[in-house]
Image 1: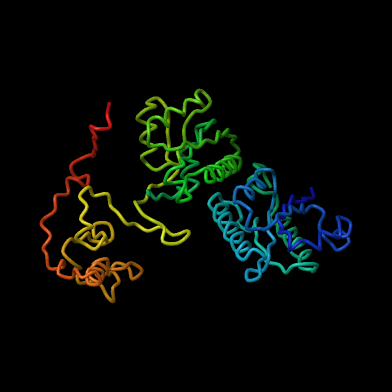
Image 2: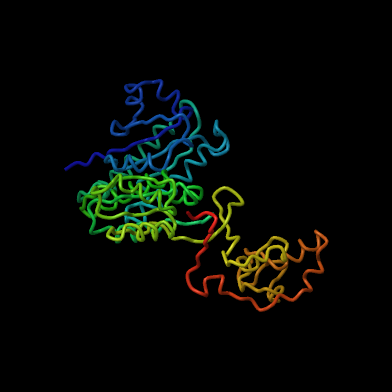
Length: 140
Length: 222
């Protein structure tokens, strides 16, 4: 059976601004996988660990955060904070015996750029290779 | 404040493996301030337990709650709002909170979700260091405000051991030699002579060596 992962992406307002302005169809034309759900937040520094864990609770196979480059975050340290929280979840996933690469932090430039699509495709490929998330209580 | 750290998630999962309904109970006191057992951490641990149980093919119901404190009986009594809704309590308070639940709810199962570490402070965000040993016989007025009981690896009372190098402790260069700091501080405050005083043999009974301690304030009891 073909496995299509549920991937939840959390993107900051600035990183995803122009890309999202293209709309769903525009993103699809650019090559954005349709199984990646974009969740826009004002700043990735606003993301709590519990929010990202809830994504796994709700059935995500993979989660990623796209925030500003570490040295040019609009809110100074927002994306650095997000990266720390993602690292904390990687550690927790390892403790639970789950692949830590099911969650990732990406630092992207603002505005329209192919990297926004690239990281989505990269995560899609990675999670497809890993298979369904064991935290869903289902077997591969 | 009391500093604590969350236990490894698998240790917690083992504790609660036979329980289907858990009251996960945070504390708004010290453990909330040190980001270990407050409301936010209750939310995180609840998610981790649910995910961990699901991975094991089990389901668990978690009630999330946070008390003002778990070290006062009046707040412990407020646990009754969840009466009959759980099989066990998983406390995110320090060991005092777990003990208090056990004391006042004798038939309720209670587990610790955190390791209670020490009495300390936060010199910078995300860092906590031990400052006080709660030894019950404070001598900080003699040591420039710096505690050799808590902060000297050997709890020496009469100056450094001789193993320190460049003001750092011989057990670990990341640890300051507190006696070097006491000496420096006494000098800066014009009290260097205090180093010459010999501290008498200490009575450690106040430090718990005489059994569990108790403070009774007659003016506050009715």
